[in-house]
Image 1 (tube, chains in turn purple, cyan):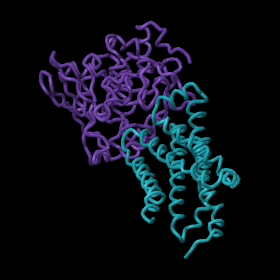
Image 2 (cartoon, chains in turn purple, yellow):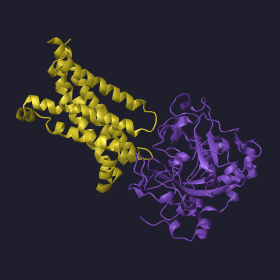
Image 3 (cartoon, rainbow over the protein chains, first blue to last red):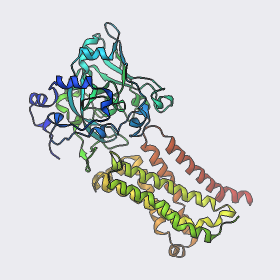
Image 4 (spheres, chains in turn cyan, purple):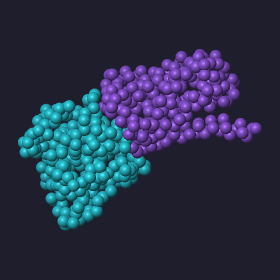
Length: 305
Length: 202
């Protein structure tokens, strides 16, 4: 396997080249596209190729939107695309509470006016040992945190998916404890890579991908990237995430991609990139080691998996 | 009405075709890109689930054969058992060739380290002697008693296969749980019939 460019390009250059190029043109496209356009999307991937790492290829829109883990719409990979059609992501609000100056509820459209949408092409690595490369649109979580003004006592951020059993069929069952909960440490939440995504391939997020707004934490296993977020709380104690509460020996709070620490059910040393035949070697922190490893240098990664 | 051997004999080719056809269809779909976004995983899951279902089918046939009017159904068992082994092999080959492309070092580690794969692999090992001795020659050579004992391995194989499925699933374990229950019921029935019932009668 080729060494990804991220490991040999100087840090600043790498960031400039791939991640932090703001595209206001695309931003306006992303925000103004009518929903119906999702249906006749053409894989116009050329604009995103500039942000790719060497050896990575964008996954197709059709792959990204038909192979999902979103248990609110049942547990099969094809289920979210099938059973999320009745979900209504508009109108939408996000409430911010806990250890903040002023608890507040944001209207999603109003929030979009306060921020700038950027393009981010990220690898997504699922704990089940498959991966994709996805061109997201969104804004850094840090932008929202800065607007929210958390208190200095806030050490963690807790996220909740909306609970709407009439539109999310599996929520009427005990498939998982609802609502789905995830969390990040404050420094992880403020890391420039951590994204709140509102679109992909220049389209509003499809329902099955977590419409209208979801988290994307590219150096962690996919289940950390919680979908359809409606509540964000700042807390002093570490929140317990949904998968962690179900099987604490299998899913840790950190869940950083780590080829050296196996999940009891899946070896994490390799992965299948969707669309490829042979497995790839999984990269430490999913290839984002330079950007994130400083946060974990004092952490026993085998213990805090 | 009593079904006779010749009735079942007539059904054999149809049953063979009906049970083999899905595998051919999936292989066709696989090579034509019709198995979705992650075709290797999909093919492996389909073959594995079918293997478990056919294994259970052979156990049900054994039970049905205890009912007087279905006695002769037992002549279908060997063929169906071999079809189950055929699916187990396809499942295993998908894992070795398509999923890991002969990365034997990785596969051995996987079998040793991951309980659900260990269980699946032991189940496969259990089924091998059954497949090898599924012929008249072996029964004669081994004697019916020993042959019968060897073929009791179908029960551990069935239990391990259903556990293999149960442990693989992350949530929504209802389906694999149903398979485990079916296998347990069939095993309890066998134990009752072979051990407890003869004791009561005596």
